[in-house]
Image 1 (cartoon, rainbow, N blue to C red):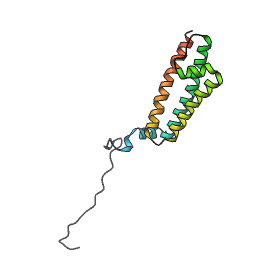
Image 2 (image 1 turned 60 degrees about the vertical axis):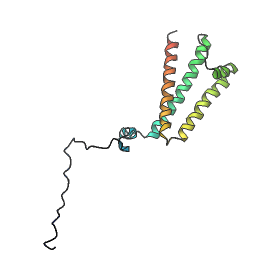
Image 3 (image 1 turned 90 degrees about the vertical axis):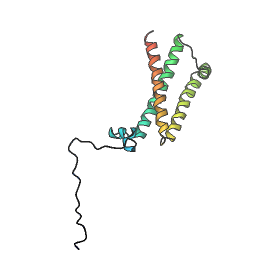
Image 4 (image 1 turned 180 degrees about the vertical axis):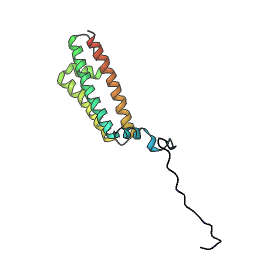
Length: 142
């Protein structure tokens, strides 16, 4: 080493104190909703699977509660398409209702890598949960 070269010393950054958090960029993917799910040990595919299973189950509950309310004679089906299938019979109405939600769930599962699939599944499950809760409360009040 010659006297004209500067002396460079490497200093290591001290680790942050215990309990301190480092500032992060809010736009970072590690700060999105997917990372929050990961912290709980839930992957987005796993969440989508459970949402679709809940959607399918709520759909069956909706069908059963609708059939029961119609059987009691206290309700009418306002959905024209479903009214047609209910008029055709139990097998056709069950096949249509279960089939349409199954196909929709399979489509959402097929595009599961898109964030919109998870959003759609959550919204649909929420709507079906509200409908089933309303129907169940109505049937229990009879």
